[in-house]
Image (cartoon, rainbow, N blue to C red; front, side, top):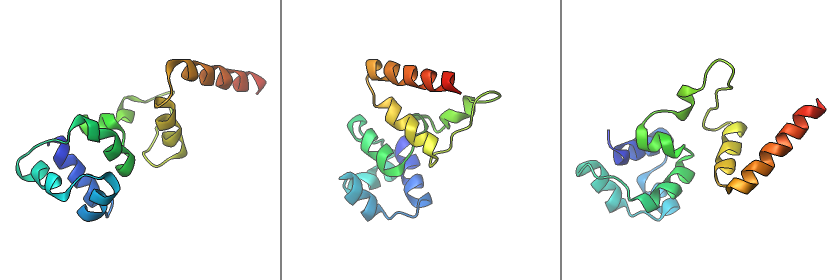
Amino acid sequence: MTVGERVIGLVREQGMTQKEFSERTGIPQSTMSSWKGKKQNPSIDKLKVICDVLRVDPYYLISGTESNETLNNDYVTVYKKDEEYELLIEYSKLDRDKKNRLLGYIEALQEKQ
């Protein structure tokens, strides 16, 4: 399955129309048609807005594999619409310095327990 086909499938799964998806992403419906008919993929510059609108992980969108499939045993499974997932998305947007500061803050909170 191509990335474009995956996007179209996710749009359907979420009960969104192609028109609504087009309005929310700024991607023309005709472009979406080419993803399906010509087996083309979205351009790389559109992936972020697509992931934001569909609330999916970029890794999933590209690979078709849930990134949480590798998490097991001592890790908490994170689902797309959970608060934890939202935190991961926001964390991924931070630069390295801010990520380190946040991790330090988390460690400090854990020590207080």
